[in-house]
Structure formats: C-alpha cells, structure tokens
Image: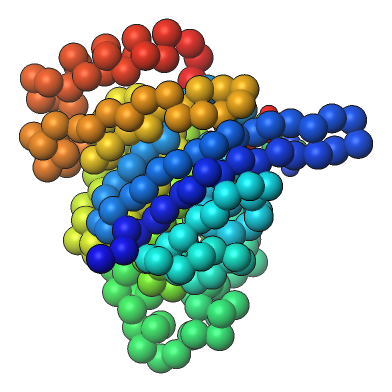
Length: 256
Ligand code: ADP
Ligand code: MG
C-alpha cells in the first residue's frame, strides 16, 4: 500500500530581487496512513514552506511530493490546511463559514451540509451555527476552522501552529479534541508547532528541523504508551518528561 505522503529530495530556494534564500534542503520523509507527525524547529527553518509544498501551493525548486502515490502538482481537496489564524469570514454565519470549502469546490450537496452540521455537533458548536465569528471565543473559532477543514473530507491534514494564538487551557482542550477526532476519522496529519510538549503529547513521531537551510536533524518515535493516551493525560505519564528533556537537548535549548 502507498504511504500517505512521500516527500522526496525536496529543496526550496526563494528568489527575490535582493537575494536567494535556501529555505529547505533535501528533505526526505514518509508519513504512513493514519499517522500523526509533528515538525518542530526554530522560526524560519522552513516549516511553513514545507507544508505549502505538500499542499501544492508552492512548486518546489527540486524534488517531488506524492500523496497516496499521486504526484502533487496543485492544491486539491485531498489536503486540508489549518492555520494559526482561523480566517473565518466575519459576514458569514458559523454554518456558512463551515461550508466554505464545500461551496468553493462545488460539493455543497444536501448530504454534505448534513455532515457539516454533524461535525458542528461533534465540536459542540451546533447551538452556535447561526452566530457570527466575532461572537465566538478564539477556541470556538478554531473549532469552526477545524470543521471547515474536515468538511471537504481531506485524506491529509496540515496543521500550521493551529493552537499558538490560544490561551493555555483552550489549547489543551483543543489538542485532545483534534487528536481524538483525527484518530476516529483515521486521518493522516502533519502538525507544525513551537511547543515540544504539544508535539510529544499529540504525535506518533516528531521530526526536528535544523535552520539555515532547513534540514531534518533528527526523528523521535513516541513510545506507545504516550501515543495511545490522549494529550492531556499523556503529559502525566512517567516517560513524558524524560522524552521532553531529550528533545530539548537536541534543540540545544534554542528558541523554537
Ligand atoms: P518557518 O515556518 O519555519 O518559520 P518559513 O517556511 O516561513 O519558516 O521560512 C523559511 C525561510 O524562507 C525564511 O528564511 C523565510 O524568510 C524564507 N521565506 C519564506 N517565504 C518566502 C517568500 N515567499 N519569499 C522569500 N523568502 C521566503
Ligand atoms: Mg511558519
């Protein structure tokens, strides 16, 4: 069976009038179906660049990306993208925001809308479907963004620091919700985060990137006990802090 995602020898050079920036260099990685992988590394090491390439938003200078055996050449509904900012439209209701992706791709059937309502219910948002984004908290808005992302039924979810603008409690609650939802729906996910504990608590595997140029420095497999425990409870497990220290040292304590 094909892997969910294969990134092969990907290098990205940005060329502007002033300079050429080698953003990522020779990235090779494979993500299996249903796997949850986190990407951590200091600011500017090319995390967003790599996600944009996997999403088909940027064509890499060198290398290829395949999703389920098919080469990525442009954005597609096979990939869902969730960002730090929720980018909800303030003039549309929660329900209409959640339906955006379906609407754009011409897939907003009656059944699809029913599924969106069901997703809103799962996220505890059904009672807010007629509200507008400004009437909701940051955590609720990110849950709407998650519904909108899941609504088009992508095989792969790319999550670029989706919790970093939230307060700590909300972030912890959302980590659990996202992990449980993605596991239940057997989705494959690639998360970018600054937060080592978040990466350990949520992932099956962590990839640490080196900066300038962005290259894979090391990969950590998360022990089964932590993997199979929801993020909030995983933080309490005996092996958690030892793993945190190990990854922290790998970072050299540098700002992530
Ligand atoms: P990260 O998400 O890890 O912070 P980015 O992928 O955003 O890193 O950026 C990696 C490097 O590429 C940085 O040096 C950044 O300045 C540069 N870069 C990112 N996007 C562009 C762009 N559109 N044009 C030129 N340089 C860019
Ligand atoms: Mg980034």
